[in-house]
Length: 352
Length: 277
Image (cartoon, rainbow over all chains, first blue to last red):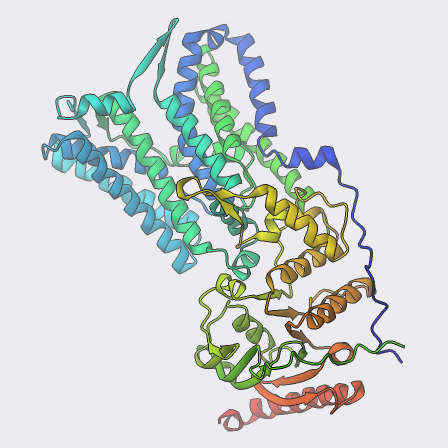
């Protein structure tokens, strides 16, 4: 008789010997970025010794901070398998809202900042809502948002303020306290270190903690890496995605606010799509897979640092600025290849 | 020779653990399940048999909270329930072994184990995963299904197919306090893996759980099943108990059902009026 239950008893299931070293390397998405950072620091440290002085360090960290805040937020979104191209233009649009409310409507600084934050969150909510409910690729949805925001902010700056520049905000009530929170600096030796550095560190720390130590973080990883499994197990994929779009919008607002407070005004230029892609480049250099499910906030922060060192290094070494773009392209390609290797290794085991 | 044999259902529980009453699920105008009534008693293994597209997967989706039913009732210990999410179903003690196992390859084993139901400590802004407890429970639960010497921090992609299945089974055993739904894995199983799956099912029955085994393999079903629910085109095509049939009967019924439905769909294609009603 064949329909007999096979002998009961603990059936041994063989486990592969864990490959410790590989496992550990794979557990650290930021490793390639860290290696890249070391290489870049050594190369440009030799080419442009000014980079390693306190002044050079301050300017590198300053440009890394703004990039890093956005990079960390975008990294979280990439881990959940989504894209956001609108964060850079959202920074400018939200700081324009702040500036117009202060300058044209005569509001106090803090109410203006709160309203621009609310506006930014609304944009994030719309982005997230469209992505979650229509199933359209977030790349295209946020590209549309990018275009709408850029056009609207340029047109409304012209219409309401009469020029592409709104300035002279420092007489508004509450400006001093806002400046203390978003714009204060510390002079150490001959470098001026800005408070944006602390914001960057805080965003990275909170991002890391959230990713690895909260249920939300688990949901972020699962939403990107295995959406079907996440749904089957009751992970709130839609809510997680919506929250993440709001978080990147808030990060855009923070970048914009740090800028508007520093400059006492806002210049609505014509940022190309390049600035929209910067944050994604930073996150990818930091080890995020474009397919989702893998990456880290620390990696994105290191990616931002790498980016900033290269940009400052090329400027200080006296190379022509366009070389930076070429360098960035090479860097991105290397990062993508490194990530592809990781992905191959992680998926190498046959699916059951 | 070892016969699993049906276990006496827990005495005094006249109310079945799970019951479907004229339950319907529609996708647009298509009836995935149409007025299905069935009982899934505690301490018994109910096998759902049917070919692809007969509504088995929809039934699993309803019982595990992934899909809400449109009409009829789903009763849990006599109480009507409407699960809004798989989380609610799991909280009510119904756990599922999914056909694709529902394992996130890039997440560590313990994160996979508790995905969607992670233990936490602390209060809200600082509420965090109870990592140590989650790791410990994962190792214990995996040891119960025979996987020992496990590093719960390894990504699930480093597990071999058998161990991944063990992960899905261990998870269902951990969360399935009242009922376990097993959607037979689509991937071909080795004898060892099949043994593990059947062992789990039998063990769950002997602990008084309601077990629902969804399969399209009658021989396999007859090995452990106490009751058999045959589905065809979203409707109940037959309800049988172990006393009614033997394996070859089931096989013939299944085959007959397939033949019948193949014929039926061929005719419906030719004469669309047959498909109505």
